[in-house]
Length: 268
Length: 282
Image 1: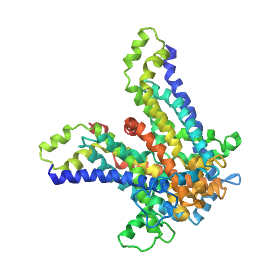
Image 2: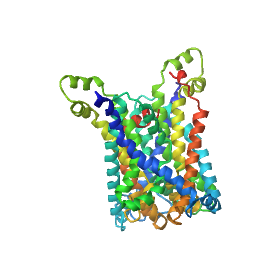
Image 3: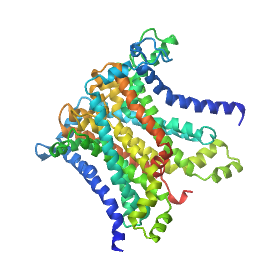
Image 4: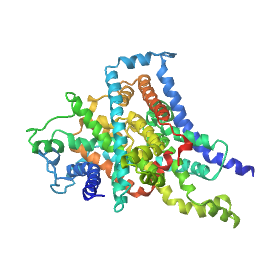
């Protein structure tokens, strides 16, 4: 490569990094600056000092703590259910050849080519009669439907990556099928399972539509923010936006090794 | 060994049951809700939907955005994926930074860009320093539909290109280097190698990225509401409005069916338009 082309290439990479990072930086400057930063004109691009004033006034709003708690509970339910339902199915796809496995895999992939969030609309009626409308359990169940296809496909590719011979060796030495799984496969699979769990958590934490349709007083953080959006001052909106982003960025960092298992392999 | 043959079915049974209850049932229920009115079957709800003042706008806005944003995302993501390939030092860091938006919700992304594009925001500050405007200017109102469209477009481009990018990077990693090397030996230019070798081999990944991304784009909801409020109706926000404010689940279901049909249509279109022949794959 010529010198000029190398320089252009590096500049392009850096510009795309800035395109991703600068907006996050700007909302952080807005919500972590001294009070009044949000309404200042013209804006300063450098942070004018660190202050938790805006964040504190956000958490002082009636209902924010409750909504945060609801979000964590909902995401926790989604995480546990996705693992409990998805892991066995992924194991079955990876280790057994059985009639219908291709059909099952196809159904799982097809559910992703479908706007699942919209299915919350009819569920609100039946949720009322089952007494789970406006509860974290109700929202968590719908979010599990969103996360389950990922959980199945990722855990399937996860178990495919662990040699079958290890388990077979366990059987030879007298382990039952389950004991071989628990003692030999599970320890190797733990990081991947954690990644699946984190993904389920993020999917639920970020979901807005179903959560808004299925709750009234026990809103999740996203549904709460959306409901109060039109009557909230800007600093509340920005603080809420920053708080929604921070956990997600951290999560993506934690699962960065598994991003391809989720989006790459699973999308074929 | 009967047990062994039943085992895989026992393992997938819980997930099938779950999807039956939370996927198949609400799907059927949505269709029922849409076509039922006062105890009988009718198209009445669809008539109400068509007479909704925002119906035309929501249809035009949704399709307009999808048609503009998805091709742009494909081009941008492809460029990013190709730029990442020759990178040696700092590859993991760049990959992580470019993937960050993947974890950001549509609502949060809308709020991030609101902080930039609002009246006293950073965008107007730049225009002010360039001497283009003297006072804060509104971009996200009913009177500036073009600017509002552009704002939503940029936000979607920022937030949701990462998913296309990751699928394409994963696809590129699977391509054998020999094809491009052979083409280079026979004198193909970089552009020829890209359009004749890399992109055709990448078809399966492009196809699944487009399907996934288009379906999600039709579900656009919180980005639009956080930036434009009710100034920019889309199909999902109308569905939400009919369910929530008008308390009319039937008309909401009609909007839902519209979104489903659009997603299904797009998926079928991609499956036909981007033919993937298994025997041609490496």
